[in-house]
Length: 574
Image 1: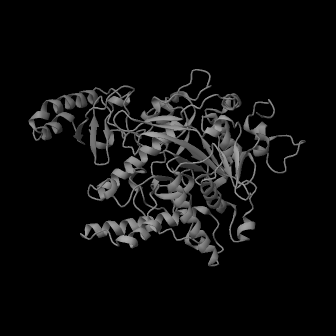
Image 2: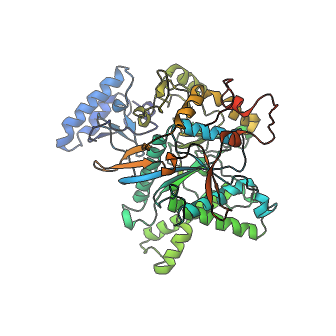
Image 3: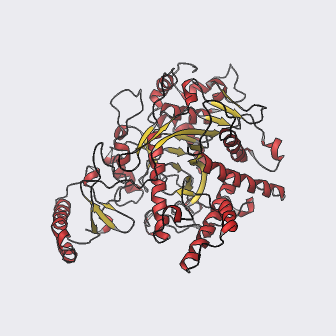
């Protein structure tokens, strides 16, 4: 059995309800007929493990040689980052940074004007059960801030920061105030949709941080907790190309960024090799390891500190006369790159046996300026940008093995990596109000054939060959689309009590419970945060005012609701 013949699951397994996590017996990856190679290593095992290992070998060799496929996550072998197989009926627990308690989740969308894009982002989120989104920058004009030096996308930085300034302050409105540990998810609504519910977003966020912090502890020779000078609490989405380029203003230090922890053969033998001779595929085979600002999620206090640093850098660059800053992403990415350079320097200091230098006030100053606890969504399980990945994924049914096999073959993927519903999605209930016999295996979901990712959000940032049109052409392919109007109506009804968004394990038998803000008890529409008022407010906005593009008149042939719902039933209001 060759290593390539064992499928790497896109997500780790998770124990069922009431199930205790048990041990997993680890096998080195073997090749050729299973029994002969297994015998070579089993004699080296401690005696107390020989019987257990022998049973595993019998199961492994017998099942594989019989040609029986693995249909359930608890019987499939999993290869970990060290090339070892885990096998057994008791899935090992997630790596997670979750700690017990109650927190809130807030969804913040930087949007300065109405239109179909922000409408689709908001309606997809609400249909899936997310909290009432908060729109920042509404009606803002970048020329009022920077003249002709910066575009509207730079408002993403200032709008989110102003919101956090106010909501973490002492005079915030009742029901809207944030605590430092509450989670804030910033999603760019210009070309992004949600497709999986908040429970999945939250679980993957904590799992991603848990895995990243384990990797950091390994790099730092087992240090943990307060001994660790670095950690991850913020996750930004990742993309294949290091962009924007330096002539546009920022310095992203592309060659100084860490390698991706994703499988090294993600795109076959040419993985991580740029192809300049074919411009259409130049960056296709690069594993995602560069910051994409389409989604950034983290604790309110940590996110506030990160955004403040980004804003300071933006102000300095504009003050120095730079006029080529056309995108917020470059500023976020530059701050992230500086953090990674600082981390590498600290690590080299430790490896040379030196203390974490400088100490005292100097150390505090450096920590404040360079360590922001930011990491990337390398597996693109939170957000999947489609730029330079134009053909990597598609909407499909996860149970349709024949279709997946055929598309994988077309992409020259020898063995399909999409092997059914991801383990972390199997026990997740479909959103309330969904009708029909739908489950995650027969619902139309976007998935990536190479990474095996079924992301929480889909980011339509591909632009080559007119692919931006997918924000229209693919809209009715999302699983929720046929029931969108009904799901929204149900979601926006009056409620007497708030329900948890997610309940996650947090060590032993403890739980971490996420809630919406208490303001969701009285609010039934998306909210608009405006910071330029004497008393900053969070007023509600109607779907008509949020979704109707500027310039759309009553006599147009196709209204916003004709595009968003496509059901001929007219407008939508609550």
